[in-house]
Length: 248
Image (cartoon, rainbow, N blue to C red):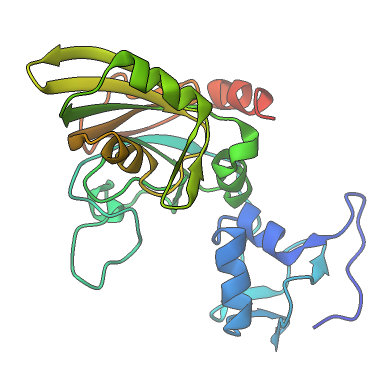
């Protein structure tokens, strides 16, 4: 490991940030890769994620040279149900990468949708953008539509604006509205900024509702409009720039 960081006009950065920006993986995953001894500089293993570098010259991951970061790209993907948001599943279930077009450049999912949840999943080649969009502090609103069975009132849904604690887990403010009801079946729209694991399903189960279908319809200003299950397209650079300007 180098004794001192390389200098540049921009100043040194932590290795995890540099590699995330280059699209290698998320910062957390990179820290794990360092602990596993998979990242080296000029042939010498990096031993700490606190290593400061100016660029990726001389860095390798699993023996392969790291290429400089490419221009940031963001894609909309309509994740179908029965698809895992992961690179590989030991159980042999289909993953999002099985659904993407052959030859598509390397991308990482922004957050996750659980196995049966469908809808908008953003994909990017930029680990720093991925991290920024996932942080609750960024305040990006995620909107879902849920088809559920059971009895619930609009007043109960409006109470979710105050947040709720379920099994020791605190869920923040949720804007929930009844779209329509047919007998004991209903469609509910829910908007939130945290996106904790299975948050929508857990909150609705807390209200004694059984979710039979869950669709994420938007992530910030980006929506599912024009996409069918399994479809993917790229967000225009101008729209991406405007989106990033609005982030906290």
